[in-house]
Length: 114
Length: 118
Image (cartoon, rainbow over all chains, first blue to last red; front, side, top):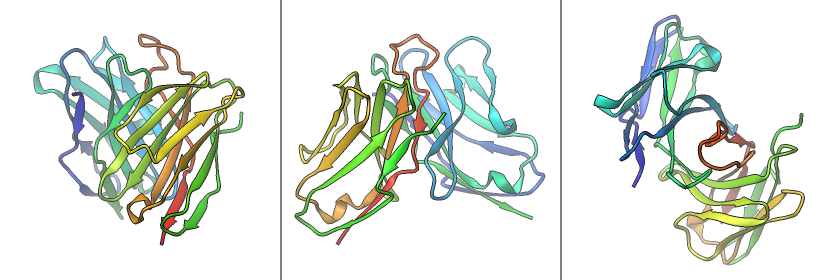
């Protein structure tokens, strides 16, 4: 079954530092991969998605992610973190033939310190 | 354009009761999905409705059910509540077109209904 794994439960970075959140996927074919963000008390918001083509995808709020088939990874990056980026980040995959059945990873909670 | 609206925002029930949660999708969206979010299990897919038909279902007991109306609004119902049903229930809407379209997996979430079962 398709799945995504986020190995880091909690990450702390200093404001202005770079950020990389890890995501590994398990999928037989080329997956549809996503990153979502959830601020406290809110629903999730789509940051970016990968379907095919260019392996480096740009998203909203200055985020980008790189798809690496050889490593089964889809890591999220941001060159300079702002305090407002503190939130929980979820990697996700859509099931083949599953229309909008999205499977989410367990999430990585990002703390930003001044 | 108004976002996804979920009501109520908070709900407190006791074991054995039943509950109905409501979700109004973004105008023009025909797919509505429901997710349960808990600290221990994370986000788990409950079901998805498209044009009043259940198109996908997660691994939840039959106590969890849903439906979608002709205006795409959706409700989910949980009967015979258990303590373990305490969770944030999130609704997400999307255009819901089939695979291969750019809107696959592109979900717009509401703020959720926080259900507490005592």
